[in-house]
Image (tube, rainbow, N blue to C red; front, side, top):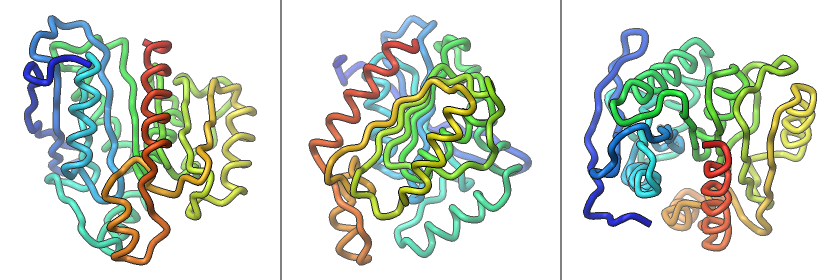
Length: 246
């Protein structure tokens, strides 16, 4: 891992269909350019400290990383009712989803240090669903990685329509993702001829990458939990995935 003292970051403002958005950009200060760019899409809580930390971790691997705002003005939530309401407001309109993910993609692609031909995306929970749908939309992404993300499709891809290579890191004990959704995802990807890998992690619940999941699970009586082993293994799988696609 690179020297954290070289890490630089800044908030970045952009817009989509009239909505002001606020992302978070991080990069290696000694990066001379032409590096892959990686979008980071948040859990339903929004671009909070956890997502900014993950964005910095991606940057420390030598990529230019940008956390993407899906709610507007960098808004975050502390309660699942609020988070669910904000998430569903976005997911209820495919036009809004496309406008906001495409806006984030365009902003990262335009960064001076970024190799515009090498863009990837990762996402957690809500963000995992987003990056998988970006792949289904046929966006020009080298690779995407979903961590405990929803698998529901906003658009069934046509044969050959998925250009990105996909990695799905799934908690085998995730109560939010039914087996039917897993089966349908694999069927759709096989029909589309997509290049994908689906890795289930034993005993891992929803939110397994986030240390705050334990406290939130207890506070809100939700089946959430951090799993150190699944967190570490999925991160290593992501690193291998990007090493191949970039």
